[in-house]
Amino acid sequence: MKTLKNKQLYQLTLTQFLETIREPEVLFWGIIFPVLISIGLGLAFTQKSESKFSIILVENPPAELDSLLHSYAQLEAVKGKEIWSWKVKDNILGHTEFKFERNDWQSAIVALKRGEADIIISDSVGKMQYHFDPYNSQAQLAYMKLSALVQSPKTSNTTIVVPVAPLTLKGVRYIDFLVPGLIAFGIMSSILWGVSYTLIERRSQKLLRRMVATPMKKSYFLFALMFVRILMNFVEALILFFFAWLLFDIQIQGNIGALLVLFMAGNIAFTGIAVLVSCRTSKTEVGTGWINAVQMPMMILSGVFFSYHNFPEWSIRIIKLLPLTALADGIRSIFNEGAGWMEIMTPSVALSVFGALCFVIGMKFFKWY
Amino acid sequence: MLQIEVSNVHKSFKDVQAVRGLSLAIRAGEFVALLGPNGAGKTTLVEMMEGLRKPDKGEIRIQGKTWQKHENELRKIIGLSLQETRFPEKLTVRETLRLFASFFGLDEERVQEVIEWTGLESKHKSMTGTLSGGQRQRLALAVALLNRPQILFLDEPTTGLDPHSRLDLWNILKALKDGGETTLILTTHYMEEAESLCDHIIIIDEGKILQEGRLEDLLNEKARNLDELFIQLTGKTLNDHSEGEK
Image (cartoon, rainbow over the protein chains, first blue to last red):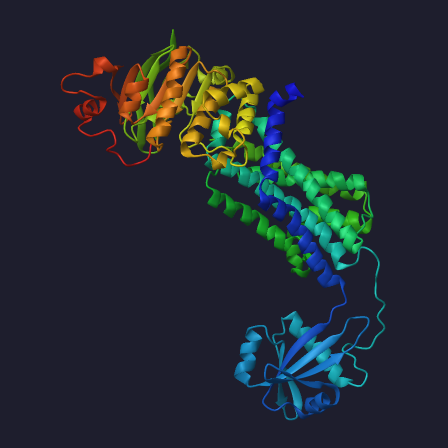
């Protein structure tokens, strides 16, 4: 142990580790935040929740709706306002509540702009006239549910009456989609901030220059930085998985060995990118900009929180080329589809080669001081 | 034996000529002050001697060896303290010293020695981020002394320190001088520092040597101290310039 303590690789790794765990922000953003996100979003999307829609009736309500409200809704007084509440029970898709409030057109528009209302309904010769942004999915859903209900109020249906067989298979829930995405996102985020930012900060503090003015091996320094970061990523992913398993019974259906290989490939890819991003600048403000420029598009496009198939068809080919997409899709396929070695071979090789390439280019232009 | 030989060295940054054809020689065991105002080219010259910058023209030899061919060897025999180095704030003084000691393959015993030598015993468990300016400079000096350097470069080690901390550091350097095994190259714009610590003084301005020699040889009836000498040579005081050092 005494000789090990004198070894620079050991000391570089140890000090890097101590610096990482002594930074409270690292523990929060790396471990607590992803767990909180998964719990929050997991609960929001896996529990049967009540859908609530706010409707504003302008001028006099259409006679058709007025009579329905008197028959099926309850009048409540909320903060001095009269509000009709129409509750519809649905044990499969979740309960729905429509709240109707009377107001003038100007106030209704303001409420719509503020997101306080989903739809405005006015009278058009005794018939209901819906006003809403057709690109707003919440407003669209409110319209579809309400118009279906108005057509058959007695059956209290807010959807077209066709049989629904709920799927409760593991791997099809939103939380099953989310957790692998969060693991992939955690790897990217942690490496970009942990490696890039550390390098830039040390360069700006002239610490890199001070260190290379000794017989320190530069390769050991980089290895220690990456090793500690990958180790932390592993711990973070394990903690996130543990909570997801405990709270949502998340399972890994595929090959765990393949998952570890893909995990390493993801780490290699983002380490390469991190070194490339931080190879020249010594200004932390510039570095932060570069890290965000790399991270933000992938966070939005790569299907961490929602499927990238929502984007236009032409863009999907490009999105699939992003490293985070390859990693998130790969981890998801192992978690939810039972994928094994064969399925992750291509993304693992692609990620590793891409990372190695970025690393080599980064080192070519790397400024130690 | 000459420890350092600088021959006709030039260095420019874009359109600024920081060092213009400068030559000097430093003997073993000498304590040398590079004295000059901010922007005189002291740091650039020292960084070239430390092997951290390459001269555009000219040659620098340390114990007869060039940085290009003998970098690994030379890194082991020099110690240095840069201007404004910040050590990792979340490491203690001892952990920082252990880290740097490991680069030279040194053990805990040596770490303890430099802690005692620089008076950091009471702070050895403190995070470096909590140290005062004077303590940080002592840590920088402790790091520089770890490998018992034959040549020690200190770049403005007392700039920004209060008189008490400055005196502490001078005492450590005087003790080092008494040991007689180290050659010191110190940049400063404090004439008292040069006068009290160094045997040989090199006055630099605008990238050129204006005058050099032993203190007693440099002073005369017209220039009774280094500040007066500098005024005599340049027509300005040592702390005339406000721009940063290149």
